[in-house]
Image (cartoon, rainbow, N blue to C red; front, top):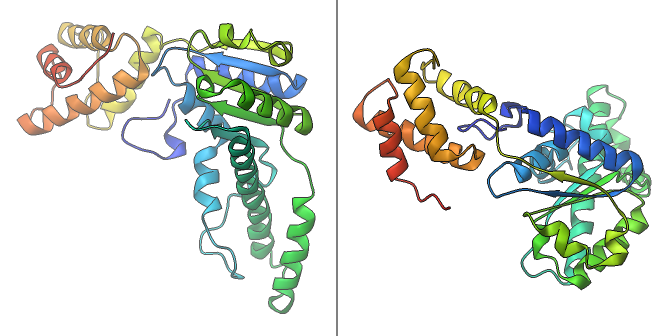
Length: 290
């Protein structure tokens, strides 16, 4: 999972649950099946899907302008073969809007894929200044005609109505790729009513909360940055860990929010040691559902 204070992709912490999700995605790609991924809110489904699809990088680099011969921020060359689309279903999701949004996502990846190749060619000085514009347009047109999608990930699939699901099924059939629908528990029962779609489901993955060891791993990684080391054999630290786990119930989103509150309280009170009392004070500042 991603570390709490940094949005950079390199700060993502790979947990056992993420590895299971990655294997699930690769199986959907290999067999071109529809996969259903479900789990309670806050366990890291969306975060894992965005990290696997590298969607943060796609969003970042698709906004850049490469209408100059020397890009100021080169696109990483490894993105030249990117083949995964991440899309969050909107609340208003008519079939036409779904199709338009999916095509927009495809265009973003197409742009980043081409710009990654272009930046590398500029770096290697394959382009001459005089023929730059003509060659770029010619190559880009050829690039757009090449199919590349291997996996389509749809988040918030619970929002989709029957007609929108039919649009996605048709899109999946046309692209001949893998498809993953992410949603809440019970989504698989809802989709079982749609025979045309459900008959194509090949894999089901339940995204589970963090284990105790993963909780310790994430807490240690976060707190180490502030010079705080947790020792489970120390009674005060053991009591603190138990209080955090009881408050968050192994939920990553709650752990994220609680650690931020703990950090704030420690700064306000100018202390550098976490205790059970600080955890309980941080817990009182949060609205934690059932």
